[in-house]
Length: 266
Image (cartoon, rainbow, N blue to C red):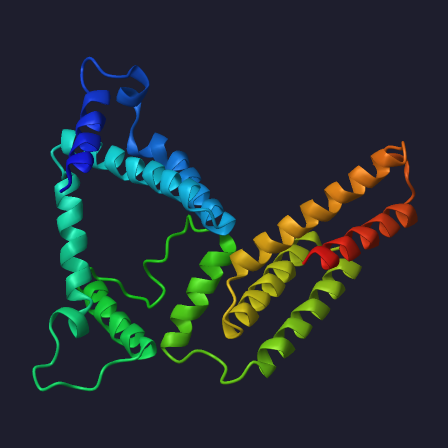
C-alpha cells in the first residue's frame, strides 16, 4: 500500500485510540450508517457536477468511511483494512477469468454482455454457497426505492421473467395509471398507495428497457424543477411581488417563461 494510504490508516487508528477524538471513539457501525450513505451521495453529486477536484475530495471522504468501519472491526478482532483489500482483490480476480485466467487455446474475446452473463453465473455459484434461495436475494433493502426496483427487475429478467419488447411495458404503465385513477376516484387510500407503487414500478421497468437510470432521470427532473421554480421566484421579485400572492394562472405563465429560458440556454 502507498505511504499516504498507510498514513490515513494510522490517522484513523489514532482517532480511535485512548488519546484520540471522543466523538470518533464513540462511533459504531450502526451510528456510522447515515454518514456512509451521505458520503456516497456526495460522490454521486460530484460525478454529476463533472468537476474532478470535488470528486477527488468526496471519494476521499467515502474511503475514510471504509477505513472507519475496518478499524472498528479490527478492534473487535474481526478483520482489518488489509483483509478488506485482500478480499476485494481475490473476488475481482476470480470474477474476471477472461482477463486474469484467459483460455490458453485463445478463445474469441468476450463482449460486455457475455462478460455480464458470466459474472452473474459466478455470483449465483457464490450465492448458492451462502445458501441463498432466491434470485432476488442479496439486493440491499436500504437501497433507494427506485434503484432497488431496477435491480430487482434486472435480476428477474436474468432468469427469463421479462417481456421481449417494450410495447407491453408501456401497456402496463397505462393499465396501472387507470387503476390508480379508479382507486383515487373511489377514495380508497390504501389502494391508492398500492396502485401508485405499481405505477412507479412499471415506470422503472420502462427505464430499464430504455437503458436509463430511473434514479438519474428523477434527479435530473428534480434539478430542472428547482431551476425553473427559482427562476419564477426571481422574476416575481423583479416585479416587486411575492410568488405566493400570484394566482395559479400567473405562476403557470412564469413557469412557461422559465421553461423557454431553459431551452434557450440548453
